[in-house]
Amino acid sequence: MNQNHPTIAKIDLEAIRRNTERICNHCKSAEIMAVVKADAYGHGAVKVAETVLKGGATRLAVAHLREAVALRQAGITVPIQVFGGFFEDHMADFAKFELEFTLGTLQQMELLENFSANRDYQPPVHIKFDTGMGRIGFPWQQAESVLTRLKKNGAFALMGLMTHFATSDEKNKDYAFTQLERFQRIISEAEAAGLRFRYIHAANSGAILDTPEAHFNLVRPGVILYGNYPSQETSESIPLEPAMSLHSKILQIKYLQAGESVSYGATWRAEKDTVVAVVPMGYADGYLRGLSGKIHAVINGRRVPQIGRVCMDLSMFDLGPKATAEVGDEVILLGCQGDKSVTMQDFCSALETIPYEITCQITKRIPRVYTKG
Image 1 (spheres, rainbow, N blue to C red):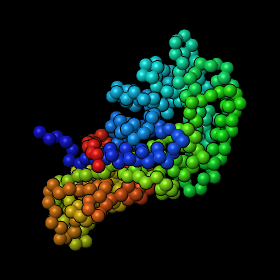
Image 2 (cartoon, rainbow, N blue to C red):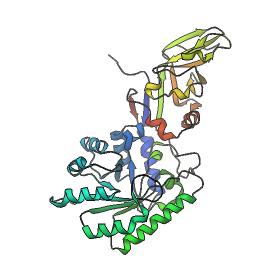
Image 3 (spheres, rainbow, N blue to C red):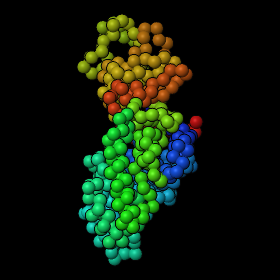
Image 4 (cartoon, rainbow, N blue to C red):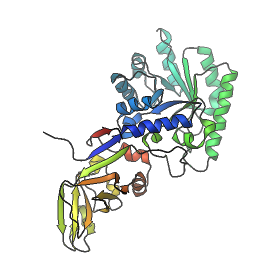
């Protein structure tokens, strides 16, 4: 018995592999730490991790301990950095699963010093400085004191020295270069103190595309792995292939007369007799209510508008008065059918958001179906 949701997210693993290879070729002097947090931006962390490693990535990064443990339990053995910090009760699992810490506060440093003091364990750490993001990390102004303490305690395996850009996806790079200059001063201070980090890293997807000065010897691609550019302001210096497409089927055909309404609030009324397709995809699946009246689908080779309010489980599309569609016909919610398409940018424009949010919001109700081309 088939109990699957009639809507699926197809994930093209070959597209992800090719995107990874292109990133490797673009950043020839740097290793690739593939960012697979948030279930690989909604694409499925384990499958994506296996794929990016085949494409040339050598390391992985996630946001939380639980994400890293899931990868280890799935048999992923490469180094994994946990970006999102840690709490005292996390440290034993970091050690057990051989995970790398992101250190950004003196409190965390003290916790880790105390944890390792009576153990045969040298915690692998990436020292993160906040050079202008206003988020996780030691304040860049405190670099001298932080580096002095690192030199004095000698308790850690110094895996990385890192920062994160706030505006690398914007056309104006002034602030990004201000951050880069601050980080370069910290690098110089670390070298002067005799501290040797295995990796120096700063470049997220935007900086990978546009700021080669920030590549150093490790880069951190995220959204570009999945075939999406960070914003419309970045260059397209690496050709990318979108990996996710959304496919559904017509659940019911409705024949409306002029003046009849569709969905909650009766916000849409037919101006003339028309045919409406009811499609099993709603905001509980990640097809957000904010898309109401702002997005299209492709049905039988035609782009057709979504009408009325998107419901929790259903959405409706106006096929026009002469439509001959049938129950079970394919519906492309994201992707291509012939020469017609609904693009990631269509979603971003409708919701005034970024590609990251679109793929991350596709919920677990929607099965991921993996393909290779």
